[in-house]
Amino acid sequence: MAVYAIGDVQGCYDELSRLLEKLRFDSARDTLWFCGDLVNRGGQSLAVLRQVQSFGKSALVVLGNHDLSLLAVAEREEADQAKTNAELREVLFAPDRDSLLDWLRARPLLHVDRALGFALVHAGLAPGWTLDRAEQMAREVEQRLAGEGAKRLLLAMFGNKPDLWTPRLRGIDRLRATINVMTRLRYCDVRGRIAYHEKGTPGTQKAGLYPWFEVPGRVRHDLRIVCGHWSTLGRFAGMGIYAIDGGCVWEPQFISIKSTRKKPAGAPD
Image (cartoon, rainbow, N blue to C red; front, side, top):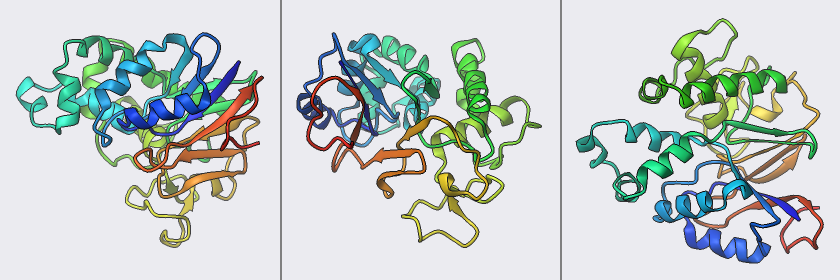
């Protein structure tokens, strides 16, 4: 039995298939944790969605910003859907699109496994959030996506404001702020205000900004956090954070969370 966390796949079906072969993945005994962004850029998003969905409970996926963007486009008029890129059009006009999109929309924003001692999120957590607060905020968004308000949220979630999550936020602003933290966060200031346009490697950001996991006074968690989203950061392990978005188009990244088998080459200790 093994549990592996895999970074952003982004439509790279061939690369994912080679990685699963390398891991000797067996859906009858192993589990895969995906950091989100299953779709867009790699050219094979439809094949990736079909493959990961076919794994059933052996695949645990958290939503990324590209996944949410696909779901949002799917709520537009058909003529507008036809204007998106060819890779996403293949999903939107596939015969099984409803099954795939319903499955994707039901994925969580945050997964916490206290038994294993790990949490999984696409981008990051606000520096002032406890893990309990993060779970609460994720559940608020997930409940809206599962209900009648899903379309309104998906069509209203885009935007950089508010750029600071606070408990005083209500309605769509509160949900948008949570989504932005969990699916778009890289750098922020000491208060947690997100710097959306800073995407480079640490050390290139403007003064007063920090990688979200290095913010002074950040709430520390008793679980290790696995995330993706930040391809220029590359593979990073420190301060209880495992960042594994190496950019699947170049090199798919993974870590072994639990294994009773010999670790494949490349898995960290």
